[in-house]
Length: 476
Ligand code: 5AD
Ligand code: SF4
Image (tube, rainbow, N blue to C red; front, side, top):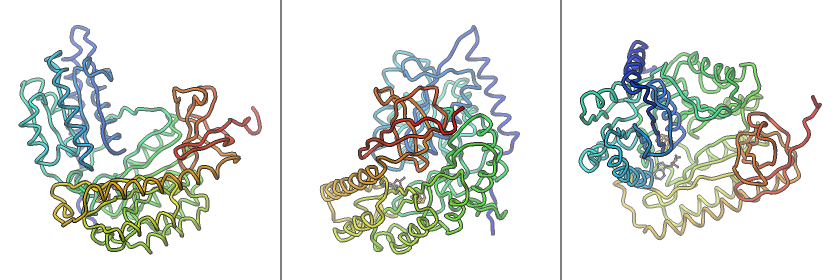
């Protein structure tokens, strides 16, 4: 039974855009050219949210700067997944004291997951008086209205009520690049892994309608984007809340049918809901990248249970095997948490052995970070920070060794890559990605950015491949 999905009425977004026009008239009066800075922490979902903030700000008449002394409006889009990110945010927001002193009319906003936590919103209210506006992820659609209130009433505004979240279509977007694009297909998470704050701050799973996702994908292809990453906390449960019969695999196939030369990527997948149908669909869709980011978190069944992950080691390994059966050249990456409460030496050994068995192309490893309000925060833990650090280093060493070995196996091969930017360094001045998402540095004409090219891999290390452009096949 599909739950009732809350949507923001199109008229509401229209109203926000009218407010943008009013703000534009106010801030550009007398020919002024106001500037804004959006500083983003955390995951790709946050990057995508910042593109909406910039879209609104551009409609309000703001240009963009990376110099906080120059900015009339600063928006800090925060992350709450680990304590480290929160500490960085607080440090950097504190440092804005100087910019506000130099420019007293500057408006400072802090938004995103961190401030959706009551204790953090409270902390900012009390200890960071320079912050004028605080709003959680559920209020992003009404950023113009909140900003206008700050401008008109000259008072601090706090908007981070508890909410399950809604879906808002029609917010203007200002994308960062012209080659790669994020495309949010769903928001929120229903999984409640015991260590994770995301379900508390981003609300329940809600999917965008397939026709809205498709319209955006078509527009991206028409605008020349070549690499589209479908985003969601758990893309494998796409569509479950819609009850319309389109699941994630179906959605990939529909996007694959859009004419044009481009790649489809996606993240993140949850092993609990990854299906054989998904792997088959990936294999059958020629535009779908041969890359699977499947966070395993731990190799120990005991810890997976305590994490509330709903799969065990055997199921995870079987999924990887199935995926590789359909796509022998599949690049597999993962996330791992080290030092979850009560993770023993033996549990950790299970993680190491799983990594040896799967041989991930790349691993994103994290030391467990206690999150207020999550079940894991009150689980007893006899292990010290030093124990965890030692394990973390051991795991990183293993991850690096396997990545280097996997990269070395590319040497001598010729691969198709998408050239996506400049490195700013010689002699390898261009960066590119293989179909599986591996980074390849090259030497070539920046005019190649945005095009596919054949590259012979000549060298490699743990983090990247190095290659030489090959003459285009067929000439012309
Ligand atoms: N501590 C450490 N890592 C975490 N992650 C999520 N929550 C925590 C936490 N409390 C990691 C998981 C997830 C990735 C995005 O961040 O590995 O997959
Ligand atoms: Fe967090 Fe688990 Fe949801 Fe991922 S699936 S966002 S780790 S609760």
